[in-house]
Amino acid sequence: MPAPDPTNIKAKIRHLPQEPGVYMMKDRLGSILYVGKAKNLRKRVASYFQSSKRLRAERPKIALMMDMVHDLEVITVKHESEALLLEGRMIKEWKPRYNTLFTDDKQFFLVRVDVEQPMPRFRLVRFRGDERSLYYGPFVHSQLLRRTLAELRSRYGILLSDSSPQRLEDGRWRLYDDARAEIYGHPNEVTEAAYRERVEAACVFLDGKSREWVKDVEAEMAQAAEGMEYERAAELRDLLKALRHTIEKTRKFVRSPARYQRHEQAVLKLGETLEMKSPPWTMECFDISHISGSFCVASMVRFVEGKPDRSSYRRYRIRSFVGNDDYRAMEEVVSRRYQRLKNEGRPFPDLVVIDGGMGQVGAARKAFMLADLEPPALIGLAKQEETIFFSDRREPLQLAHNDESRLLLQRIRDEAHRFANAYNAELRRARIRESVLDDFKGLGSKKREKLLKHFKTLNAIRKAPISELTKVPGIGPKIAEDLKAFLERTPDS
Image (tube, rainbow, N blue to C red; front, top):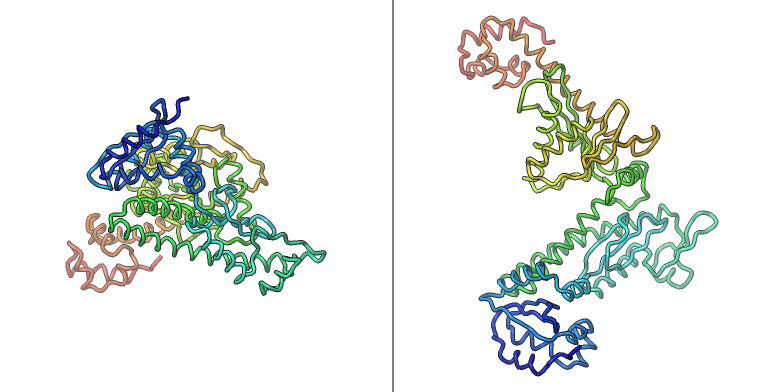
């Protein structure tokens, strides 16, 4: 292999423009090794050809790449922001080997908390591995992060990765066998429950820190962009994206690092049963209810960490048609729910459960497709045999009667069914009460509808004074007086 020709390259560098642009390092075959951006092309490219000894000591990966560089090429642009965009497009198109290596080298530290261990420890890691652990970060400055962990150990008495606690005969744990037991100033022998309270307090502290860091990075990124430091702004943008991603994922795992309870165990088991990438900590279930096509309504119930989140329940009256069509009803309510979440910028649940079989699941999936929305995991649970139907056409699945996954799905499906039926019954009772108006001869169907539209309920009409009744179009003083007298004679059913 011919050696790089430094004389030829350095001659090129001397004639490079001192303008913004993108540079490409190439090997002897003309393949692109690396793409970079620069505010001043000549100055930036020349920095790669500093003392070889110094480069190998300070930046060994770059030194390795420079051994392969045989030629270079540049593209000038008008502004540094254009260079940033062009660099991104070229990296995406060409996928240069050393851009990938350098990106991997820039992985920031995360704090991992092994909440599934009996005595969770706080560790520094560069990559997310165990999806059942909690993660906080990423952190740019490793020294600052280590000081933060030291503060956590001092303030809350938690264990770091260098600790090996021992279980005692009485079931308690001894954290340290040396002088650290006195240095850190917390009881050295603790129960598992007491130690987990420490872990929970430390995680709350870290969670708050993470939110503070988001605000700090946002402010620093805005300042860099305002000062036209586009390279720094781009780095902070990537950091901000990673930080938000980690916070979001952490919230999806477990809100509290306390020992997994029965509900949480069922969620974990369900995630494994459905072969999901991560457990369905948030689930939403839909059911349709009607009586021979009349009073067609739907319900949506939400479970968080395996438990009902009743404040998030929703109920729907079907708008798009009148009659008996479960599939169209399901398509309508699924579309309304997730279009709204999208418009409000709120996340979708980890799992959507449909009360019904493949037909209802297909209707729900159609709703996502027509709205151009990427659906989360989507399944149906058919009542008769409690069969699980998958939207990705996997074979239907039946579980044992006492299986935790089956029991959890039954709970959320039955809750959706109860909530839908309750709404249907409420509407039917209201309609029976409102039918009293049919017996009042002074009202036609149009005036009756206007009254109900204005006052919403028969009870509100009963309580309204005559002056309020006459505000409804078509209701004059004589009709209002007669209606008031009629309702006073008619018992409230």
